[in-house]
Image (cartoon, rainbow over all chains, first blue to last red; front, side, top):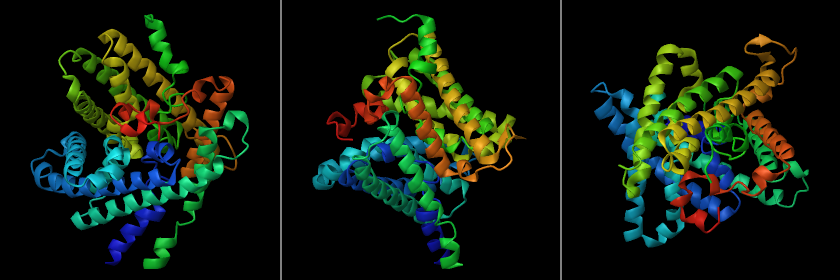
Length: 196
Length: 221
């Protein structure tokens, strides 16, 4: 249990996927303008990350690794994730239209989100077992949501800022992201202090 | 509007630099530029994938059905990424460790899918190859600049040779990446007098998934 908590909190705070591993920067900068779309996007990311891990980990462990096909990892994972996202979208549209309305619009974007492929690949390189992988995926997703929601708040303040002309728009947003990211460095020893 | 070969080649390096002007591939730009050599390595690896994927997709453009084109592109790109990954692992093991997970993540690099969708699926093989080389050089150049600046300020070295006495180590970690990138984009804005980025803001317009993403069409993201 202790190990699980360490993995979970490391993924959320210390090794935050967006702010310290630089994965999923495009949605982080693109969809964080409004709080509700930031929440919707991150909920969809958490959902897809968990699904993708639940599918890719057994595929790697049972199909690829025993048959010496580990080099096919990249090809297989991206295809599985792409078709999974499509499948989920179709199923949601048909059976849970309410959920599709709130999450569905973000699903096609997630196929090419490097955070999702990244978490599945990292689970393999870190040699996590199935439970640890799922916990890591959950932590990565929650960390993504935390960063998105925090940054959506920062962005609203940025709207009214009087920046030099060449810094307006993206550059000042990146500078703000840099400061948010610097604050996450402060979490460096938190996990060690809490659980070890 | 027919462009000549030289224009196609130089287009990606300056006028439509994929990183600094089109804002594509931001993840590897921020993550792999902790040193000049890593940035260069990432740039070269992505360029190799980009040139060959552009050529192959351009060759196959009449064979691939329109409805399943994105999955087809992804398969081609993923195959090439695997080949490049193996090459790097065999001939540059240090770089392989340094780039880590970002080497397989070239698959989801927006630049490559974006050029397949926007250029290679409409142009001849030679033009697509030139476009790939140009875009790849632009990407490599931007990554190299980022890497050199961050290595100089963060570790006080250039290509491992010590230059500065007291490095500012925050430039070597995550916040420095965002900061240097922000300043570089501002610099490009200043030089081009805001022409480059203002017109597009930086929403999903440049994103290859924009055509299938309803959100982008509504202009909401």
